[in-house]
Image (cartoon, rainbow, N blue to C red; front, side, top):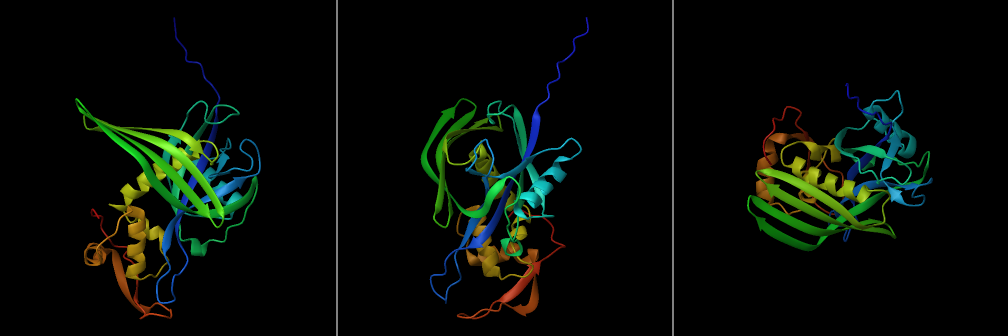
Length: 283
């Protein structure tokens, strides 16, 4: 007897998690404006979750590659085109979409928002940048025979002007026999679908990649000051960096120009560009 597998047809989608670093309010004309990590969200115009905010995505058409589908959705729904994206993870919980079994491939991108003019398009009512803040509410670590288990209750706060969205998730990380297994459970969320899970996953990946890649430079304009670059690294790593140590570690990643920033209120700083010949090392 020949055993044949049954084939099921499921809907496949893509979702984009786009980060930028935007300026907050300037406390004084003598100080640089505070920079904050921001994520791009769209207000859904159709069911399910109409009126809720979530990541920009789309159903993958029969003739499309995933990469083409994600670029198309960003162009159609937010007026963003031709940006670098990398695939993060595939989400396949059977009940993640109330309509039917929907499998989604999530992508992460980093852009300099100064070069982007957002415009809401098809199936969305609005698109905005939201400041991202993640706070730890509870933590517990249990030692196990061949490793340990760490449980964190996290609160995600996303803010855009007077609009505030909150989500609470539980993240369980098990380290056993040299391997990590991570589970994420949504306790409460103002975001559509399982997008709170996607955001936590993307933030963790982003922090890790900053350590050994040039990903942070995707957030920078073509020319920048070293102070601006350090601010971005501190935001992505979520910790302060000593100025001398930081500049020593990135000295071969940048090239000094003969230009200075055009600003008032403080002494102009030299401008730098990314060194395209840079070779990777651990930050």
